[in-house]
Length: 110
Ligand code: 5GP
Image (cartoon, rainbow, N blue to C red; front, side, top):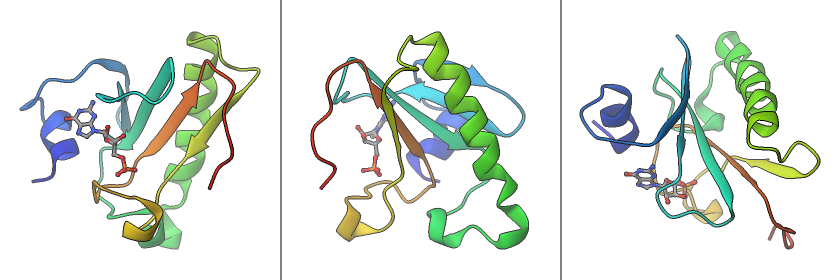
């Protein structure tokens, strides 16, 4: 079980800011910005690259949740929604998740 599956199963504590039947969102434990949330599907996919085409609706659902959270955390005028895919992109936890980052002027992406 990866760390996000443990959080989803309530076996590990997390600062949860959103939950529905498909996803949870939590505060990142090592924030890179004043607002740094992780939006995580409950279903396990290793990364975006591993989401089969029949399941791609989860991505639009995550986009919808990002819009809601950006408003709630008052960053709707400027934020980033990022998913790292694979070790070369810096992915450390191999369970699909999107970072919602904002609340400060963000630097270059790479
Ligand atoms: P990745 O590098 O895989 O795209 O991002 C993983 C993120 O998960 C990192 O930003 C890291 O700080 C965060 N993270 C790792 N372990 C935990 C944890 O136990 N709880 C929370 N809330 N975030 C975590």
